[in-house]
Image 1 (cartoon, rainbow, N blue to C red):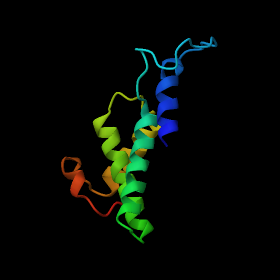
Image 2 (image 1 turned 45 degrees about the horizontal axis):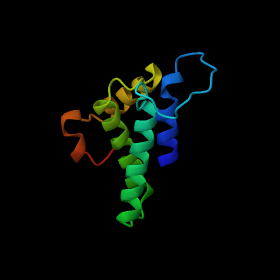
Image 3 (image 1 turned 90 degrees about the horizontal axis):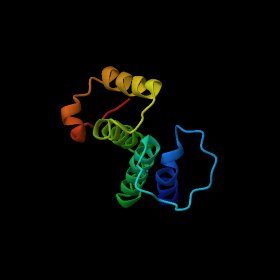
Length: 110
């Protein structure tokens, strides 16, 4: 997952351009984490905690992935999230009556 994050950041400067030239350096000052970086981090965090805590319930893993995804969106609003993705997250928040100010304590995301 670290490779996915580093690759996403290295390629971020080309995300919305049609630039086909090879870069001289892998990372430059205009590289930045994107929505893909933050989603990968959210899933990695959840999987790490799942393994660390020896949880047996996939529902707990699913809940944590969704919770971490919501936190990623809330904490990185300018990461380039797609409109449909934001709509999906808002729908999850609405359907589950989630208080985003208290998301860290939320346990039962459907």
